[in-house]
Image (cartoon, rainbow, N blue to C red; front, side, top):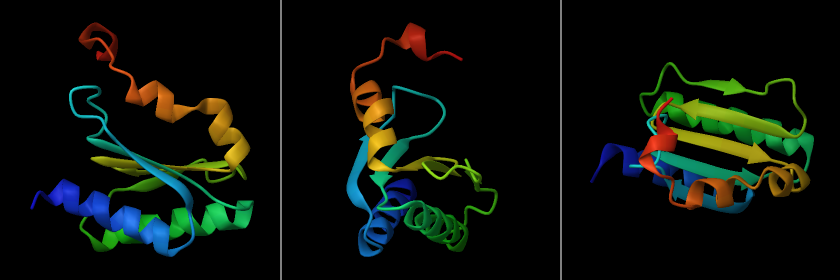
Length: 116
C-alpha cells in the first residue's frame, strides 16, 4: 500500500472515531502541488474542533510527519492541520458551508491556474 494512502486512511479513521461530522477526502493529485490529499471535517463545538485538531496533529507525528503544525490555533471556527502530503481542515458547520472547499477543490482546475 501507498504510505500517503495509508496516512489518509488513518486520519479519516481517527476523525471518525472521535465523532467528527461529514468527513470528506479530496484527491489533489494533478490539481495542486501543495498536497496530495485534502480532508475536510466538521466539529460540533469550538472545543471539539480544538480537540480534533490536536488529535490529528498527534496522529501525524506518531506516523512520521514530525514537522506538521496547526494553523488557526486562535480561531474557534476553523483549524488546518498541515501534514505535508495530507492537509486537514476542521470547521464548524456554518464556516464550512460558507467557504465550500469541497466544491472549489472537487472541480477540475486547469493546469495554468494551479501554478503558484
